[in-house]
Amino acid sequence: MFEAIKHLIESRTSVNRYDSSRAVSDADVSELVRLATLAPSAYNFQNWKFIAVRSAEAKERLKAAAYGQPQVVDAPVTFIICGRLAAHEQLPGALQASVDAGFLPLSVFDGWVAQAQNSHTGNPQLQRDEAIRSASLAAMTLMLAAQGMGLSSGAMSGFDPAAVAREFALDANELPVILVTAGYPKAGNWPQKPRRAVREVIEFA
Image 1 (cartoon, rainbow, N blue to C red):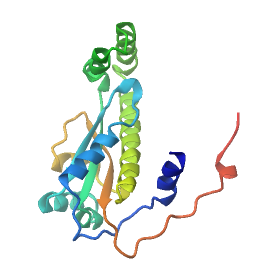
Image 2: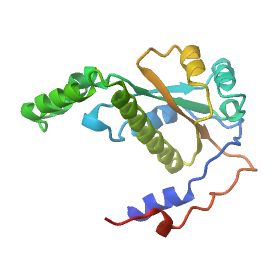
Image 3: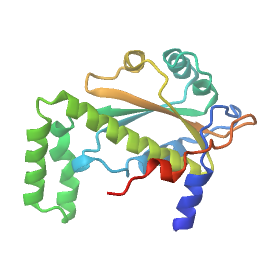
């Protein structure tokens, strides 16, 4: 199991050149999102939203909001991954399934809801931080899932958030955090770029 996961991580590359003639099925798109929702989030907020951009018209709108980058048109799907603000307001509903399944005690449910309300209410910075954390964890999970399905992916931060929000009718609590393209690569992509040595980035405490 570890070797399989290790291989996915070590073999993943960031792709921006896609074979536009090869489609990704609706079922595979849905499965990528399902797997992405298994990412962790604080209190199990699940404070994310995924927009799968697939139609030619929607791709052109996203391309304009992404400063003309062609991969959002060439890739069979580009995910707009959003984090939701004010996630504490939806927490009781998000946790109810765990209560119904019988493993989350009501005392824990009540404690988490109270803690989240106390820390997040009136704290827009924490809400934003949590939205970005959750969306980023979901994005990385989606990219590893894509790798496991034989697809390639690329994360994109180069876009105008206000334009994306406007073009895709996001509400005030939906923050576009990252774009992830997914599909089959064509020739010309770079290999995985070398990383800094572990000794340069690790510190034991």
